[in-house]
Image (cartoon, rainbow, N blue to C red; front, side, top):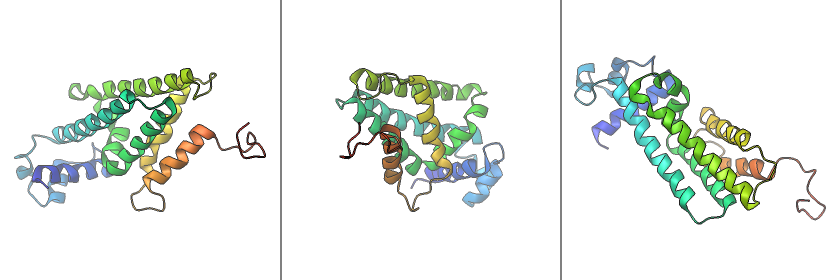
Length: 199
């Protein structure tokens, strides 16, 4: 792994665990086994580091979402794909997701991080589009409050970064499977007929 990527990985872990404001350049340097001055050979500030961490992660995430939107899959399958790739992102990029969840409001106050608000808006557009397609196709209920459903999905998916840990009893695929059953099929048995089909 290139030294620059290694340093970014160490910084990401510290930003996620200690918080961006509470992490100093010295903390990153010590965790990397180098002097603070040596870190400046690679990055001019910790702001530059978190900028690179977040922007590169989100570029890939939204490219994946865009691929889902443009696919020929049916509406329900697209929603399932978007949920699965979200949980995969939590699995593969736990630190990046945690940083965004914890620090976006703070960082968004700086001009260089204005794109974070744009990404939030883009995320909303992705889910509103998917849910609207779902309702129009008949895959989702016609009386669905799309805005409320989007907020529910956003808040319940990404909060998983606080408790999900790779190597635990549930894989990210297991979590996504359970989440999709709850989201799309519910948790009540009251609407299940004797034959096992939904009434």
